[in-house]
Image 1 (cartoon, rainbow, N blue to C red):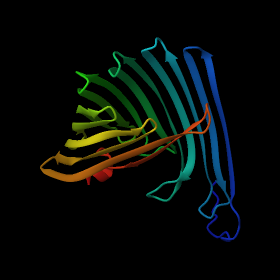
Image 2 (image 1 turned 90 degrees about the horizontal axis):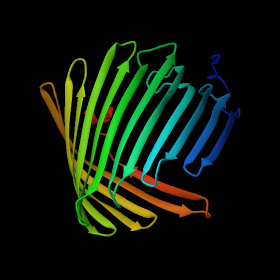
Image 3 (image 1 turned 135 degrees about the vertical axis):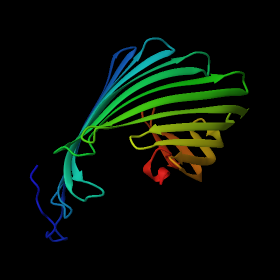
Image 4 (image 1 turned 30 degrees about the horizontal axis):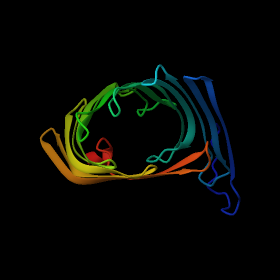
Length: 275
């Protein structure tokens, strides 16, 4: 798109917003469901300049049996907007896909495997261009009615094209679960994240404790607290953190439902966590 300098436009001039969306839900067979969504969001004649975004997502869910399910997802986004740090306007595409397979054995036991791919390309190309590959496996298992565990192991590879740099990240976490009532369970959790960069490696050790409480059938609270300890080169750092999650579902009709969620916490893999 053509760049237009609108910094001198009168603040009283109204900006033009144009939005459109298309959604489709198809049950191709009793065991196959397909969803498609297309969206366009544009802002023109804005004092900050023009910006727009096209997005599309397609998902297919296949139930091989009552206990085994596969989900395929494809997404694409093309955006023209202001970059947060430089302030310049750039066009870029963000696309990818995912495959997830889950199998349930027993009332509360489940095993899963997922593969993901994502790529971000700026026009013209810049150092933020990257390709990302990730794989994850998970297991939830209850030894008895009172004791259980869940385990997740992830691998992520990020390849920055122009920098010729690859960042590898391995992570894993395990939770020991103790059911205190049909609606309330406590847990002890340990998570470890290892990141291998070109110049240095980072280890993160994250123990925590918390609880999950299903207040009603459609409302719940999850609260946890712990400590993040980071070790890289000859330095280390640590901090306490609190994670809180709340959700509430509201049925509008027999076929319509809204879920409200609120989350507060820290992402240990973010740049803020490593500062």
